[in-house]
Image 1 (cartoon, rainbow, N blue to C red):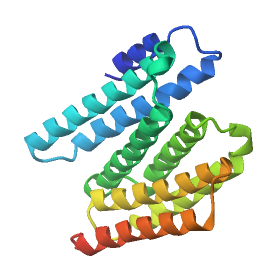
Image 2: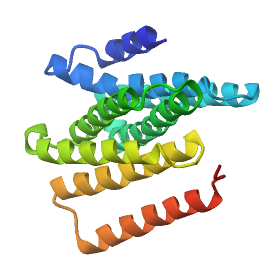
Image 3: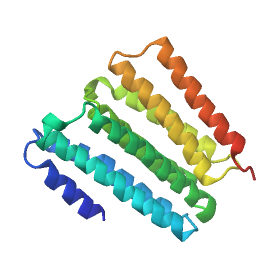
Length: 219
């Protein structure tokens, strides 16, 4: 599936991209989303849930590829920030799927935590880098921000692993934290960050985490 998705994306991108690096950066989002979904399916018990997740993955990958096609070949029909938005949403979903699955390996298969934490760190780095690039921010000016965010999320992954909560709850907490830090970083680098926006994001994400913890089953 990964090879087929990569080939389809590569074909749609065509020959109009200026660099080969841009092709690989476009591929990061769909491949991460597909990989996270495949891992997450392993921990779903109900068949209908597996089929629903597979359908959702196919649907959103189709939307992503359609946005790339419109952006490259029918640019007059392109809605501003459509590609950026769908990439950001899929990156966020990938963080949830990947980290939930990694916690599943830790809880159910006793996989060493340090190995899972390193995989999580790599996923954080790749998707944070892709977020910077797709929002047309110069990567050279964001290395310190990327390193800081990845370090914080790496430490958070390690800490959350010891909570007596379900694997998907831990994944939601990390996804919410990723959403908070990446959006603040993006707005800061674009010069659109202010105190009102910071308060709004902290209030929203703090409320989401409180609701997640309040409704979670603690074992």
